[in-house]
Amino acid sequence: MNTHHETILDVPGMSCQSCVRHIHAALGELDGVAEVEVRLSDGKVLVHHDQDKTSVNHLIAALGEAGYESSLAAAA
Image 1 (cartoon, helix red, strand yellow):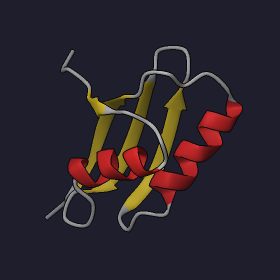
Image 2 (cartoon, rainbow, N blue to C red):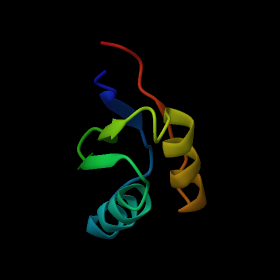
Image 3 (cartoon, one colour):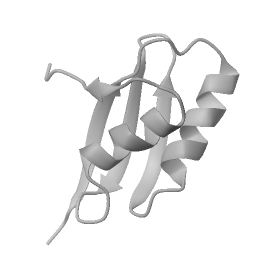
Image 4 (cartoon, rainbow, N blue to C red):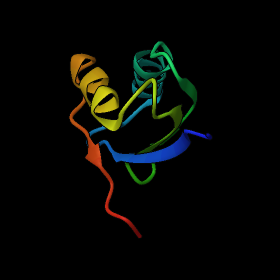
């Protein structure tokens, strides 16, 4: 069973490359996270992860611990 998933998070307040590094570090250390793409231009973070190892709540909690408020992006 394939449990890889792409999650898009809204992360307001990101403004620089330092934010990008902090977010990559916070999410990249989580078990099951394969790829993190930070889009400063629209305040989104795309995370490719294994849902059996890392849930959306884990992603949001990790960002919160790093000092970033986040939420699941609304479906387009």
